[in-house]
Amino acid sequence: MYLTKKQAADELQISVRTLEGLIKRGQLPAYKIGPQLVRIDRDDLRAFVEARPIQPERKEKTAPAGRICRYVPGQKVV
Image (tube, rainbow, N blue to C red; front, side, top):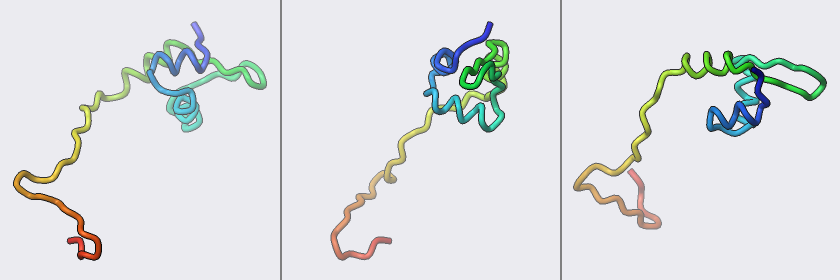
C-alpha cells in the first residue's frame, strides 16, 4: 500500500517538510508517480522506523546546585 506524503508524515509524527527532507537526503525512498504526485511505500516506511535507534528525551540544562547565575549589565561574564 502506498501513502501520500501527508499520511506518511502523520504516521511518523513529523511535518511534511521534514518528511520531504528525509526523501531528498535519500533516507526514505519515495516514488514519483507524476509531475507532482509522490507516494511512499508502507513497507519502506516501516523499515525506516525500525532502522532508527530510539533516543532518550533530552533533559533541560540547569545551573549546578548552589551556584547562582546573575547577569549585571557591564559586568564581565566568565
